[in-house]
Image (cartoon, rainbow, N blue to C red):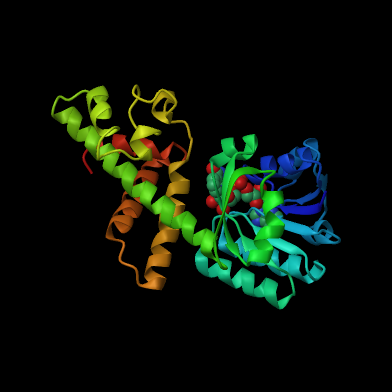
Length: 293
Ligand code: NAD
């Protein structure tokens, strides 16, 4: 069993660290927010007074933080204290550029590193069923895999440094665009007098099928487990979808990729958030289309 430092114990990091404890690992945790650290202590995480205290003597360090700037600040601290050859893994969703910079910092400090953002949300973090998308060397991935398996059910090595973040934002850009397409389909069906169930029965089994309709249908009824049946309680909050769409557009600009639908999706989710919907499930954007954008 490994000695693991876990930095950032919020909505995702807290349950992820708890699953590492359940698997028998020794987990030393740190979070800037005292109540968050206390909650983690209740699940068996040993609280540290500073990131460097958690990292000292750790074989593996995991960060789960809001944005690239937080990761770069935390990794600067971590890499000053971590022993050479400590494996450093970032599970946050951040911009590809910051992720690659973090990998370079780790390399300079003699530490193997991995970017390993997740999908599956807080439900997946609690259940230990997250999907990890990893970027880094084969050696770093091989060392990380058994640890990530304690927190997730699917672990994919996507390529070199930054490839995990790249996979995450490409996937979520596709999801944001496809959810908007599905919502528009249902709004048009309503205007044409076509029932939700009829459109679902046709589109979910023919060429319109995709995750946004088959698994996460944005109207109540056809898929009883989708957030539409639960007042659009997330699920996956619109603010997080907007964050990922913005990251995709930063990456598109930096790399010269043409993503006009991704740009449009980012604008529509920005408008939806501005209307006070950031905390609702992202599929609730269907309501905005009923009102005419
Ligand atoms: P969160 O805000 O609940 O938790 C982040 C934690 O990091 C906070 O408790 C904060 O106090 C702490 N923190 C910030 N800077 C720190 C530092 N320098 N040192 C120590 N602690 C620090 O956020 P979350 O929902 O857990 O999300 C974390 C990451 O996971 C984000 O990048 C997010 O995009 C990604 N993500 C979230 C979800 C989700 O459903 N919540 C799903 C997939 C991916």
